[in-house]
Length: 382
Ligand SMILES: [Zn+2]
Image (cartoon, rainbow, N blue to C red; front, side):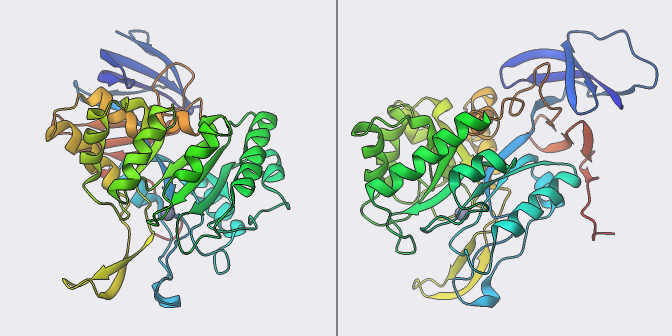
């Protein structure tokens, strides 16, 4: 098993922890100490010379098999490569389907999750898609949660003309399956809810919590920054104890980092917010009159860019800004070994220069990027 020692890391676990050495055996962090002087034979030692080290980044909403198709078959977006993920520090990804449950399938999604794992990152998925009845592997969301190892929860859409307009009762029943499936499998379990721009907003989700007292940790609203009124409801949801997911690559009414600053100002703790890219979602290209003139895929690198803006433009401490893409999504997804740099956690980490440019990435104990050169490759890139 490969043994690696990283010396002189300015460590954010994400808690600022000063200058530390990190001992990594195989895929795991085994020890973090001020000075590891005993170097086992055969160990690879890397002196990080005081560079900033954070947990590897988690993106909990990427269409890893592609999405889109809003303007016909030729507008379906391509899949994500491991190189794309590593280039923006993403070492853990949650893949999911979008509107399309016909030309895109759960089987294809599962195979892509497995492929990304073989290529070196950590990958998980949600079952189902936008609509009802739920799209599943085994006939039910509950069975998928219990029997399919990579399934961490379920996807659904509300307040969107492309949704199936689930009723209160239908939503409660799926939430119950995610909750019970999470209990049985020990996964936690979330219902990841795509929010459209319709005026009904998040009222159904707020009812789940306020009226039905459903445990809020299983409800995971995303695209909450699509419109200002929706974001106001999301702030209410976060104040009830929920975690709200702000999309950096999809449609939004304002810069995502400014949405975070506004929510902080309104009294939402930073722990209650996450960024996700909505990467590879199909986006409409519009001219200045708002007419659709083409399409493009949502970028996957804007989580990192918005985290940087929070630190450099807004002055938020790195240890807070980084939680939106490390420890917070890990908590949302109940991934106990991800999102933190502690003994026993997976050795996923990012190394930054002082200007927060990314120079090295480690995923599951292996160097995925070194000196800004991407080392992980998909099987077809050579
Ligand atoms: Zn999406």
